[in-house]
Image (tube, rainbow, N blue to C red):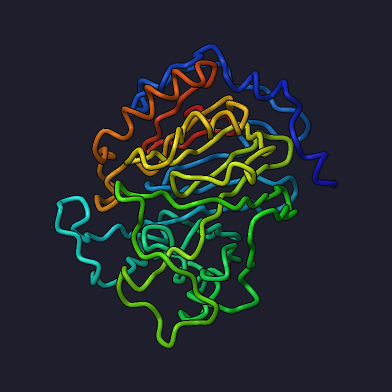
Length: 331
């Protein structure tokens, strides 16, 4: 199937907006808007694709394929969520990396593909274990490649990308966009840098993992809405132009360092039918607890998103809810 045949008509994006225009879905899944799901064409329905938020910018996407085993795709699966002091004002960059293997497998399942937006610990930490234990392919930057190799991941399982690639998998397409990492109030960020060779020893602490450039991924299942996944709250406007996702998982900004971040982003993306704020939670709390907001970033995001894109349906995700292809809670 040609890539352009997998893209949706403009009507699908209108349907995704639904009757709850501009309304945010509350944190409690029981109070989510119960609308008729957007119809799907062809052999797929909204029930054949599901999304689960893994916190931070992490997602698990499960796709049922006709006459074939189902597929699981992960984006930035950080499940272990160990404390570093980041959310208590006592951040320790020397915090040791560690993975709770049973917990990670329980949430991540057996993925066939893992997309890594960048190499900071809250995005990459659990990926080496998953790649080695499941044989999943990993898409990421050259820095991600070198870090994974230092952890013993087979080079043949790592797909190095830069942005602009359109990769045709069995039942879905992944488009890669060059992106940018968010910045703090001083216009800098934690652990910048890239790698052009594997480190002498595998990283041991959170400060050993450089950012290594940042990507975004648009995943389009066959005959179902497309979803854009961001891992940080800045972007390359020129690289994002034309992506036009139906659903956008948008990283919430914690500072105002990036000029008109949300208006520029939503204009560039064509005001997606569904907006899902991510990376707003305290990612050092376990996924067994309800998400807790990190500051006022989420509230500001919701106010600005409603003003900039009033026709978009906003879904504030939680850890427990499984969402269908139209990002409505599955019954």
